[in-house]
Length: 314
Image (cartoon, rainbow, N blue to C red; front, side):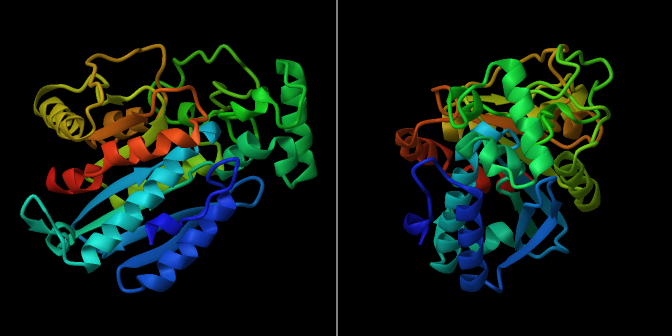
């Protein structure tokens, strides 16, 4: 099934995501639960799905595309989903564990596209935004920052949401101390007026508080590196590092130690600092984002096993 997932010439779109989620929900009704965490400013759904039982004792969380131009992470998560479900129904094994065993008493939560408005801007420019006032604001940001063509290189590198807030700088992890050097809506970097003041970041944080995840994985691009360190101490630090090392062995990505006090306020930072959840940011790919379609096959190959290893780490 996963070879048939939709994608258009500009990459994996919000419309492709909706079609694929509909296919999955019809094909695997007993294993997959689909819901929405709310709507974005431009009225796109923030989709979330659950594999396994929502009342499971242990839960992991993966999400992608919190930055608009990093939409290949959405494609990756959907392909991983298709492969995982296929192996589950074929009764395959991973390191001696059946996929049914891997999910026993556990659940996998996935938000494949956390910032669908930003993805749409990156792929289609301001004209992809339907609300006239929001579209006007996106144009205004572009004019101020040097974007001239509606689908030119400026907009292809759009990271923020439709309000010009960088969602991965919008969490309560040294948010007050973080100086974004923007002070106003921008293509990237602007932290907003308060932590979680955007629909998308609020939805991710509320889900995390509600479900009390044991592990989280934030997919980004690019750099082929795994970030895990946010000043953890003692046994918690050891657990977090071991989680990172487990994923490093699968992907072959770098695993640096240390963190930058000047560059906080991301979801992983918040999950580690405020919720004490072992959490990783995995940066896929080598090239600048948006990554070229030709990079996907190798990225998928290197990230096979991430879900399984995360479940086994519990």
